Length: 150
Image (cartoon, rainbow, N blue to C red; front, top):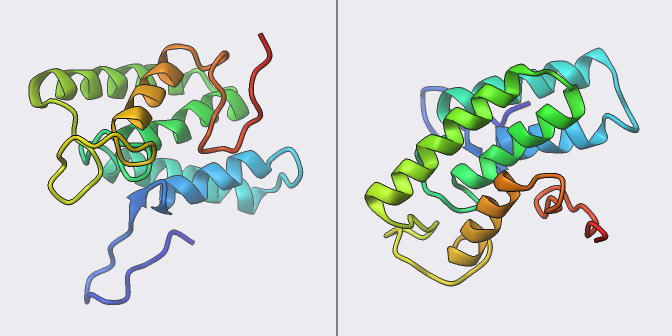
């Protein structure tokens, strides 16, 4: 399910929204309104576990960084209704903010230099921070949510 990498001898899994467990988990979470069974929920928890173990401290971007992977946890809190996600979201958000303060903006390009783009750059990082601060008011772009009416 989580995309075993067959190019290497050891099993490795991608842990970014654009390719791997966080994106798969997000898709499964968003499908719960239409299909909710044991297999889907098992895949959701597998994706959450994989993301928590290996999906942070990469970059800050949406596409393949901390703010994109945090969307999985935001959706888990909303869709699963389990309070345990609150503390994890708070902890990882705090670590991400500390990283930004200490290291500057780590964009999602090979050198992690600042760029203006949305998925891998500063505008997406800004959006991700707004989403963390106001999840009920800022729609999930990664989850293809509709705009929230004012």
